[in-house]
Length: 263
Image (tube, rainbow, N blue to C red; front, side, top):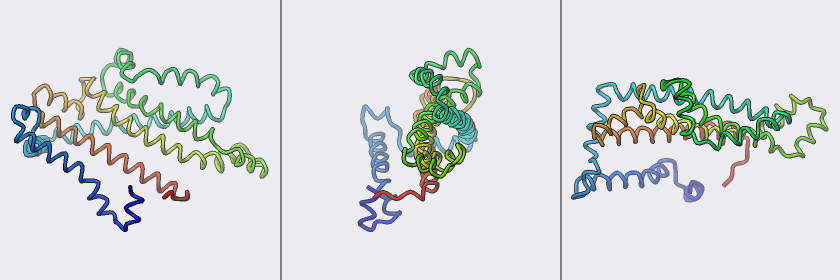
């Protein structure tokens, strides 16, 4: 789509406007259903009600407090899960004995849904922030391991042969050949880890009642039959996920600017 728009000379403002068409249409449809939906109107809230709930949460400070707590859990889990996944994936890709030992275990454990780990983690660590960070770390860990492993193992043989021709040491081969070749896969894994970490953060806040995050605010809104508060939280969660994904994608394009651009 973006390539087609560039070919027609459309600039960034035009692309942003086109990207907003569907969300705006859905908001207008939702608002119309809330105002004129008849017997089904109870399942919707008007845009004015949502704006009122947003103002209420903002003035009370609950939104900022919950948002900050959710971001802290998300980025804490993302950091530990990604770093550990990068280390484990690298060891599996570069050290054959480690690959033999850990690969069956990794593929077995990652088949267990995150929800399946919650009772065990809750019994071991309680239902506080530590348990939430552990769950988020697991959600980021699995894609980090997979894409690190695939990136480092997928280096073309002819490039490794060039390294042997120049008598590069194992460290030089890793730093000059394997690492640059694996970067696209690593950034893909980071994108996956970011998305899973943010989703897991909200999910675990909904399931673990302690603490105060966006998931907790959503749960309170549900218990109070405050659909407007739930919609505010959903909007904040979606916009934040979109913004984080966009940031990582831009970082990826900047780091990989040496690669030829595909049209």
